[in-house]
Amino acid sequence: MATERTLSIIKPDGVQKQVIGKILTRFEDAGLRIVAAKMMQLDKNLAGSFYAVHKERPFYNDLVTYMTSGPVFVSVLEGADAVNKNRELMGATNPKEAKPGTIRADFADSIEANTVHGSDSLENARNEVAFFFPDL
Image 1 (cartoon, rainbow, N blue to C red):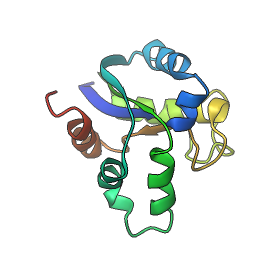
Image 2: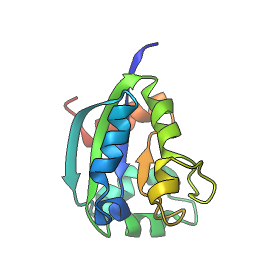
Image 3: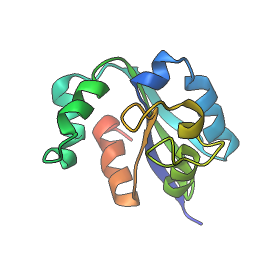
């Protein structure tokens, strides 16, 4: 299986709950390697650009407001089938529907404050990694 890279963001609720280390350990325990990482505060323009694909959706403004409400931890994960592996580790977007033992089932409070973002396809992973880490 080919090595892939995917983007992971630990959202403001995850940073506030101080579970960054616990989440990163899950990635590493699943065979994903952290090849780049940074803590940052998104501003409205950066968050708006990143989530531009959702601009016409009713939740867009709330999403941008939420993602700018506190610091986030952005990282690039690398490994075999990294995109799918990360999606499995995260669990369903709605934490009430997430399987027990997934990140969202264990740490998330709501669909909006669902602790983590992960690329949903290999193409989006390439674009999202380049968005935050253009030199990789």
